[in-house]
Amino acid sequence: MPTRLRKVRRQRGSRFHGWGQVGQHRKNGGKGGVGQAGLLKHKWTWTVKYDPDHFGKNGFVSPTRKVIKQWINVCQLDDLASSLNMGKTKKPILDLTEMGYEKLLGQGQVKGTYQIKVASFSESAKNKVEKTGGSIVTATVAEEE
Image (tube, rainbow, N blue to C red; front, side, top):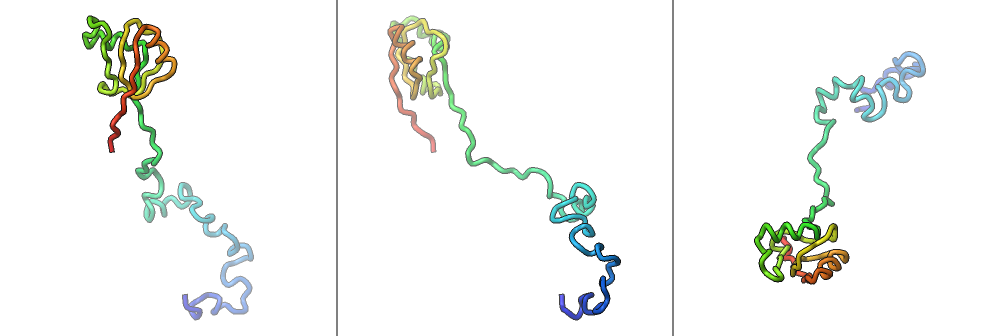
């Protein structure tokens, strides 16, 4: 703003420059707060008119999102083998990586004897499978890019 248009130029010598008492033009009380104060309260009409998209979420996707891995427990192996009709062979081969599982966990008990191919497994799962006479072979998973 040019100096010649400022109120202070016109009102040289007056004490309050047209703002009434001393405190009426000091600090931030006269303009309704500092910054974004009052946008949900006394400045709501300004918000609606000039900044309607101020509040709310804007589609941010977290860069550290969790990838859900597929796993299976030892207790589910018998049901899996029976559903695939592998109960008749002496030591059926269960390729868990081909079925979409990434890890074998050791919850429950296994009854049958199986040769299992899986990318990773827990120590308790290995012990339970070997206790029944089975074996676990680690298979490398082709990572998708």
